Length: 104
Image 1 (cartoon, rainbow, N blue to C red):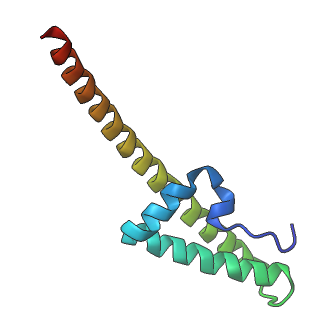
Image 2: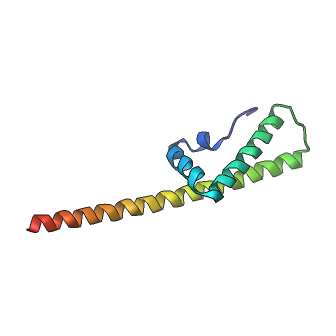
Image 3: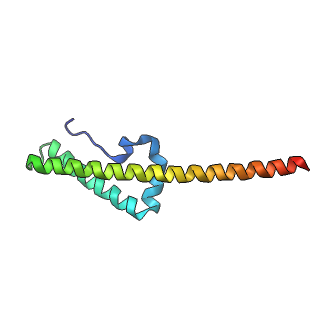
């Protein structure tokens, strides 16, 4: 669509909290986030007719945006998986402790 914004918060609204955390705590993610935003802004200007580069350049930008989006998506999933493991470990520990107190 003409002028459609593809910022990461709209692309992955279900990961709002994770995106915010990773932007603030993971330099690699933050750099990719900034690069993605710059490419998306440039594509927006092209779609609005503000800039008129060659089609091959536009295709290159779209591929670049997709690369950043994919990489950040996998970073988000990795972070979520790590967080889930922590929660499971914490719950197991809590249940063990509860089990010990119930045996007494």
